[in-house]
Image 1 (cartoon, rainbow, N blue to C red):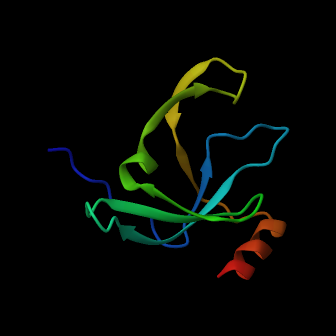
Image 2 (cartoon, one colour):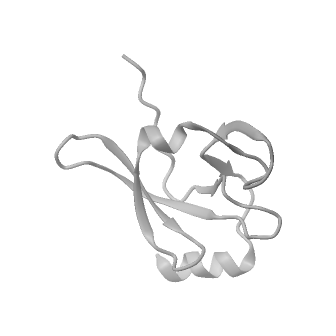
Length: 103
């Protein structure tokens, strides 16, 4: 049986792989984790800080999986990389304001 990874920390900031120098980074902020009501599968609940700032959910295993994608996205050579990458720096000012408004 594969070990299940720990859920990302609440309020941790992650970047989705789909960003380019021309388009802004797609920041995500993790909110409390959840479990699927029928299967008990662990889920990551997160809020996007771009476009409409929606709230989304993904299976925990999908959060940490590696994807084979063009890097730099979308026209570079195919490479394997994490779907989400933890961000250790602070949010840009305009996104930090969005994060405070949504809490």
